[in-house]
Length: 76
Image 1 (cartoon, rainbow, N blue to C red):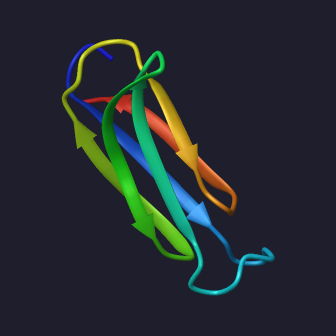
Image 2: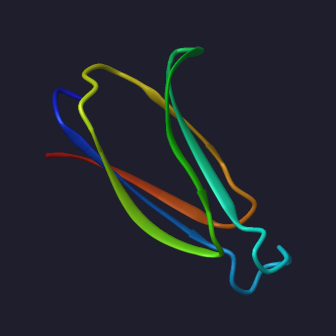
């Protein structure tokens, strides 16, 4: 990313074997294998949120979730 950016993430546990109220998504920003920042640590069975960030560079997103999820990164 080359300036301010936005992370749009969703999680949808409906219709899955995950027990109700057990949905959780965490997203970590990594530079190679080096930790940069914890971006998301969110609980819920259906999540649709956005987070704005300012880091500049090339990164990896490490996503952990028990249900289907999506992540979209866009420049601001």
